[in-house]
Image (cartoon, rainbow, N blue to C red; front, side):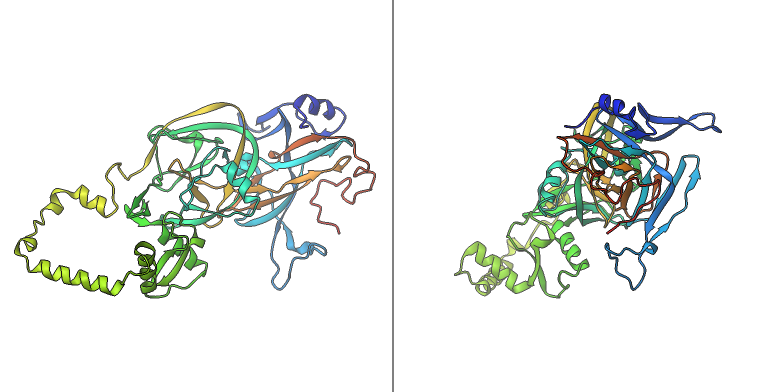
Length: 465
């Protein structure tokens, strides 16, 4: 059973959490400032407690050339201290892009002997969506984040769409879809009648490539669009950079080439392994000899008796006969000017909607606290939603940390920066959420077996084996 705020308050009076804030703090008054300063929330929530990061110490993992990290014999030199910075927004540590760091909780815990505490990341650092938010995938499907999290646990991988560093849509691997926690949400409604439910600080990519937090979006703001359509059985994606349509399977082919799945061999075609032209997962794209590829599909479409060479010769003869027909040669080429929409539709360019951008219609708060999810895209730092816009991925991941029954001390907290940019982690502000799970009293508690991490001090504690 997850314990509520009433129980947490009662146990805090018995030193379960110290220091303890009986409400959720979102603003504080600095002694030398005339106004309140917004902080990342900490304190008591409905079914948990948000603890703070201590300013005392934060260490970042650094690779030492020629060494291999051994968890049974960890070299403390692999974790170097990082300085605490301070500006008008508060005190903070900087966790570099694609880095791993360790901090320590400001609050001290004394866990009761029938309670296990689970420590999960705050959505403020993760930037999240409601679990039913659908993600656009290159295999033609759009599962919810909650579904992706469940399937990911079984080893499934997902590829989606991202805006690359040069403004071009690329195919990327969407990693670690996961449950983050519970938080308040905004509803962002677009001009295609799609609604996106996200945390107020989640970043949306605007049409000019900037990232804007959801709560700062305004009606008529133009967002970076994802437009897709089918042309001759293949999915085509609109490239906002130049306004052209480009086959999605070629983007997946580029992913395979970049990661050296195969070579860019001349005179080859891109082949869908399962013959499904809409399944553009990179593992479903292979290179085949051009002639062999044509023969394969002719056999698939027309049967074993199909003679490709005879077909080619028949077409040549038919065209030669037509060229001898004066009326056929007197083609009125003005049709290309008079009916451009027909020609554009034939070539895969539709005029049914303006291929420019999605616009924001409204942004409003949603009552209550909701389960939130997110994922990570190390290759690009952003991904596309099925609603048709690009958003930033999760940044800071707080690794799941348990505190066992009858454990005491300051938690050592593990963080990963999965984004492509350096990130701040604010000290003296909320950093992770504690959930208190009650069960039957255990036979042997952490204290009874004299656990080696008992009474941890307010400093980073390394692994002990």
